[in-house]
Amino acid sequence: MDGMCLTEHQERKDDSNGGGLVGITFGDVGTTMLQCNICTPADKGEYVMIEHSTAGTVLGRVDSIERRTNVSIEKAMELSEGKDVEIEESMIGHIHIIGYRDQRGLLKLPSNPFRAGEKIYFAQEKLIRDVLGLKNDDTGAYIGKLSGHDIPVNLNINSIAQKHLSVLAKTGSGKSYTTGVVIEEMMKHGVTMVILDPHGEYASLAKPGKVDESNDFGVYPRGYGEVITEFSPNPEINPGSRRLSFTFKNMRPTDLLSMMKMSKRKSNVSTLESAMSRLEAVKGFFDIKDLIILLKKNEEDDVSSMIRNLEDLDRKGLFTDKGTRMDEIVRKGKTAIITLKGTPPDVQGFVVNRLATALFELRKRNKIPPMILFAEEAHNFCPQQGKIESSEIFQTIASEGRKFGLGLGIITQRAAKVDKNVLSQCNTQIILKVTNPNDLRAIESSVEGITKDMTEEIQRLPIGEAIISGGGLSEPLIVDIRPRESQDGGASIKVV
Ligand SMILES: Nc1ncnc2c1ncn2[C@@H]1O[C@H](COP(=O)(O)OP(=O)(O)OP(=O)(O)O)[C@@H](O)[C@H]1O
Ligand SMILES: [Mg+2]
Image 1: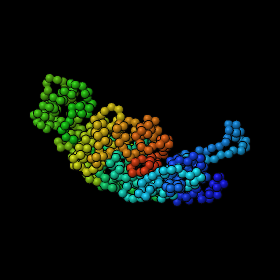
Image 2: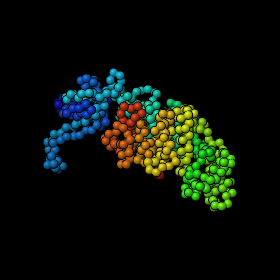
Image 3: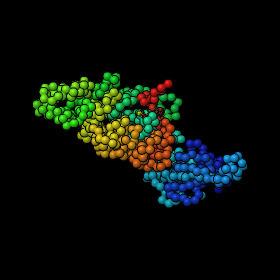
Image 4: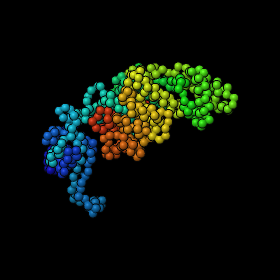
């Protein structure tokens, strides 16, 4: 067999066309896994092809490679002392069979085993494209290239929008950068979006970035200012944003108390409850100023600290007579960035809950166009532990959003800290480097088709590479993320 390898070696992989010999199958041969001797150095993850008696040419992937030797402990000792030792060794590759496309274009696995002695070749790019379903069309979201190949990876936009997306990685691994790439593609295809942006990283999508124009991805600088509007509850700290405000209607005493960082003890709740129901009975509609005036008239209880806190809240400008109209925020084919930089966490919780609830209700009644809601630092809005204001609406959108054309994009550095009911509904996953064992477990349990091998891979992914599953792909792939067209708002700050 080795002699055969040496002569066939001349056929060494001829770059993009594939075709060179990798090795020859031997031993027990199955329909989904097989092993071969390695004639030509091949890398783990490399795509290969093999003929099958009935299925035709089938695509596989090198899952692992091992070097088998006859080196005993004694021989190893002699080797380490620099002695000449005769050793026999061979390289064995374990091949995972991905399948072939049948006449109807469906991905199939052979129904009976391959033959031992069958040659395995480096796969041709056309076969890789066909079997993995990597179509070269411009209706998808061009996210990058298949790692090690010049094959663009386009994700299916409808599949992302209908069945939700998650972007998972440890801090500094490129979540915001990669989400920016996804959002650029969505904007290019006229998808309506709302982005919840706690750190103010996404407004920079409006400006063209500094892209090296000789990049291999065919990406040119482009800003998306014409489709983006930025809103913020704090336009003072976020210049360029419009004020985001709400009416005082339907406010709950407990929401007010948490925004004022006051205890939700019975006496506080009932003070607010009775004042608010009196106002409702007398005035129908009332605002925060009416509530303050009424409490000031209250002579029995000491409510001075509550009045002070309500006045502070009023000064923040979060409540106005009309509030920001939802049809001003959600416009067909446009993107609204909700910058929450400088907004205290409790107020963020209220803002996110109000917005997400309104989006869901309006989508249900078809009052706004089908859209995607992106949430950065989603563990803060739908945590696994503890219930907060927005927990319920995120669960509802995750489970029912698909029916009503409201997609969710969950971005988090702590997969384990996001509500599992939400994470498990995300059918497209973009996973960058993760090392925390709890987060890896959460990913393993929520991502379909992820193998032990891939979990290992996730811990070693360099910046710029991601494992992507779903989004219309037939199986999880390692992708080199394309450069950003627009400015990267999350670039790390150098200390020196
Ligand atoms: N594909 C990429 N190509 C080039 N640079 C990248 C890429 N992905 C990330 N970076 C760079 O890596 C750094 C970290 O990226 P990013 O801010 O997106 O990480 P993050 O996971 O969102 O971090 P955090 O958890 O702090 O929000 C940034 O300086 C960014 O410019
Ligand atoms: Mg980030």
